[in-house]
Length: 115
Length: 114
Image (cartoon, rainbow over all chains, first blue to last red; front, side, top):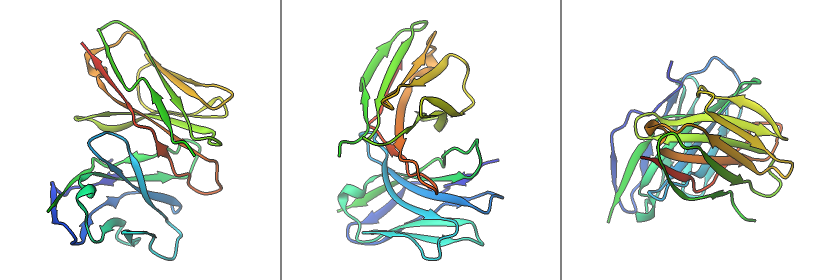
């Protein structure tokens, strides 16, 4: 079963506007971590933000915030004041507990920022 | 602090050959994970090493192997290369914590198998 679902087609946003990238996940583990990564065309995966399942507050890191809705099992990334350099692939990932735990990625969303 | 480094950055091999990729983690990080990224399959976990021991392994054939050295540097080896092994191979390192470790990735090695 797919654990991380990113179904949005390529997203477009105007420079300086905000954009929300959707991510839903599936787990029966009460303790898990959610991550967002950015991958520019160069290939390197850049860590953006982390949310723990027991965190009371939504995570924020500069222009990035995570809209965490635990009951709905969604962890949407919000990018405020988009910049041209935000054009990239964005991946949502999850790691559960347990000895065999690994970081599982969604298929990613392409974001293009228009000037 | 220097980031994760991977060598080589680009590699061209022919079917049947073998290849070794190297990853140097961020200083102080003891866990190293390897991923294969292809357009069709996306990002797939290969294996994870911690303190020279394989901690976790993905669903890849035995042609894919890895190891970690005492300085936490890691290598992965692919023997008898197939065309389908053409991919971006990403290495990530993390620092042990009590919670969920954030993995920091290197720039990747692009492997083309002809």
